[in-house]
Length: 93
Image (cartoon, rainbow, N blue to C red; front, side, top):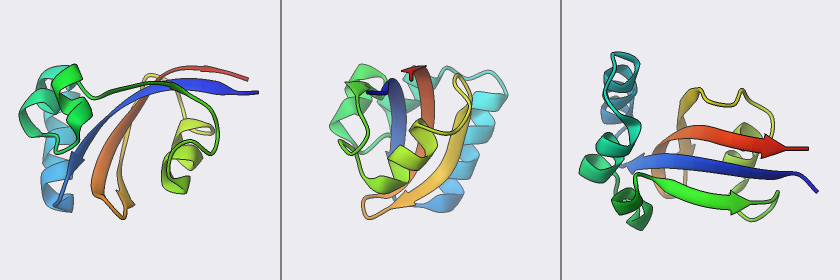
């Protein structure tokens, strides 16, 4: 079974999500941005979601985490919780 590790930042607003993505692209630390802005309890851990398999997260996460590039910040990804930036930190097939 495939396993992945990822981290994310959850915010309510798509524009803020885009802004944070640009800050990270410009050199800001993902974990620091997560601690400051993420509305998910994982924010205090730099956005870390740990290791998980397909079906353990919402479908929108699975689509990114199990198909898109590793070590790249993806998003905004819209879910019922809000807008996320997602970074897949590792994945095994």
